[in-house]
Length: 381
Ligand code: SF4
Image (cartoon, rainbow, N blue to C red; front, side, top):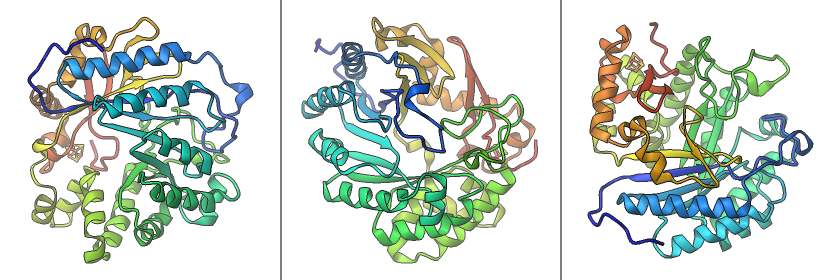
């Protein structure tokens, strides 16, 4: 690796979400994927290694920590992923990568957990949809038990487990039961990702779900309205308020990680409690997230800002050629830009919790960002 250009360390992280392979042999109801329907033109191993080297060097040259989350599809792993993972592990051992995470379905087979362990994976983010009947209906028979087994195996292998609950109408009523199960099992790091029905022309808020009309036969396509989302947060809060001392960290983490709890606490007359729990959000460590697609194309935030591609690409050159990216990377400027942007929306201008609520990036050019109030917000425009 080349010598670093900057010696003074700046705070912050460059994070790469790496969708490393497009093929999947499973036919989950969620994405309806099947190997024979999918393109096989993924970035080959050489290109993956080039992208990895470029990303690590880029973070190092700019004095940032580098972290990577791999999203391998659930086919048998082809050699590209394990070899790229092994190369990432070498960077991890040299201290050039701060964290390696994998993000997969919950029911990861035993041998893949062993591969993750051998490859120095720090954290596995595993989806869980609900209790047995709900999860097996949404995924496949046996999915729930296999998910619990994978959670326990990953923990026994010394890997930190992050539970991802993707919520649509079908499993939303089971949120409290699912959180209770995770708490009892001792898995305290939980992320909620909620499918919110996008307004016409708006970006959908659930990963992997294209903006398409609702299909009554597709349970994954039954997203919530923002008002239903408020009821969901109320249910979650009722549960979190009941967990007592044993679930104190679980409760605090979940509330901090969902900005719309700010609005809810304010509406419930519990604002002082929220501020005490969440503190000054401006103290957070800045993180700029890139996405690398199986084709080798690089984006910021789910296809919103296209930057370039591998092979032949360079994260540093992409960075240098995008004013929008530099703005996203400058915490103070971005915060100012976001708050100025919020003022353009009447409901946000008068919102008592606006400083705790970040507008979403919905579109961008290399020169400019376009922000919009959070799609989860139930306050009428
Ligand atoms: S989107 Fe606007 S109105 Fe809604 S909580 Fe955020 S700042 Fe307030």
